[in-house]
Length: 177
Ligand code: 2AM
Image (cartoon, rainbow, N blue to C red; front, side, top):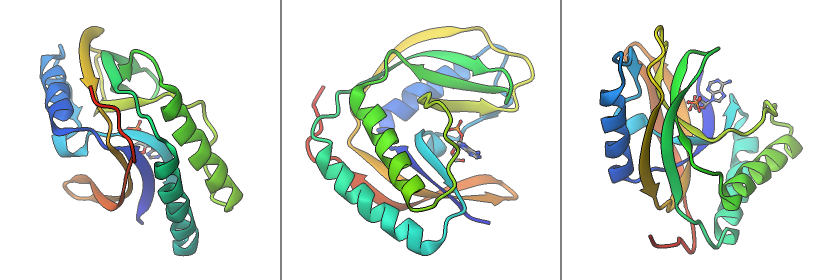
């Protein structure tokens, strides 16, 4: 069954820098996220009826025009979620525009009757799943300008999870670094 989510798109250089972090983890990551799959989830929707997805996408298109300043994010540490056994890269601080994107998509999705888990928003980029031995805490400094977010479709395949971009939403006025 296809599942959907919105995520920030990371520039290629950011993904490459994160891949360097993945490779530097000791002990080695058991299931590193493929470079092409690296993203920062804004909201996970699960399975959604096409009409609701269409309405939410129309709203996302409005939202991307209203967010007029996306200050760059600074990804500066790798840490672990112990329960799902995930290693992730986290942000130095969460910019207001990022919280706004999450909250507004959450509010609209809920209003459309989409059953979204209303967990605390903890922006992160998953670097590996199924971690058995937790790697040492790492610090680094990756500054990343964000130009867009996208609606993705997630499919489980025998070769692992596959993400397909359904629609790209380019911010109007991205801050330059
Ligand atoms: P993550 O953000 O911690 O990596 C697509 O599955 C994306 O949505 C992944 O990035 C995933 O986790 C995130 N996500 C959030 N909640 C999820 C859930 N209940 N099931 C699957 N993925 C979820």
